[in-house]
Amino acid sequence: MSYYNDKITDVMEVLKNIREAYNESKYSRNVRELRKYAVRYVAESQLQLKRYKNENSAQKTIHDACARRLKPEVLNIEDFDSLVDQWLRKGSLRLKEILLINTESCHKRIQVGQFFERNEN
Image (spheres, rainbow, N blue to C red):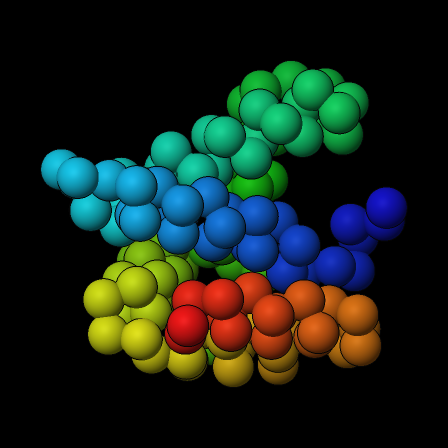
């Protein structure tokens, strides 16, 4: 898969891992910590698939997906964490809207819709 023009695949993987950890967590629901864990997890899985040459490159790229690829709607990692927190705690769909804005792929738009529908049920 070409990731060059794809702004949201890595972000969606991070969100999936954050949601799973958030729902399973009995103690820590700190979104920042959950995001850090999710970035590491996604980076490691992509490293195993040989998408990256080393762990540092993998983690930086996955982190940048969340911090920079969604500009101008998301200006930095703090904005991303805030949007994730609002989504998980309050059911805000602003993050969904931003992901939809940042993809032209019909297939990806469907994936985004399905991902957030699972959270609404």
